[in-house]
Amino acid sequence: MAYYSKKPRAIGDLLKDFVDDYPARKKLKRGMVLSVFPNTAGPRVMEQVEDFWFKGTKFFIKVKDQAWRQELHFQRNMLKRKLNDSVREPIIEEIIIL
Image (cartoon, rainbow, N blue to C red; front, side):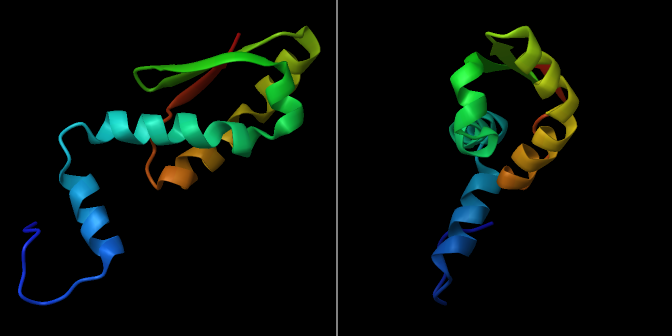
């Protein structure tokens, strides 16, 4: 999509067009997921999370406590849906709790 036009366009539409055409779009979306994960998971969960990262389309979450590991394992599909919804694209195919 052309970024230049004589007709005015909303900044949100321009940004969406840019992100859709951006060559490293998947990496950008993964970065967005990493930035919204702490707010999506919440402060109680984040107290137990040691680290989180992507490897391809898999999102890894390393947890300190076994009980929290099991709890997050049960909630992983809901968490995946919320994170994918936050970036409006199915970036995460699977969440792995370690």
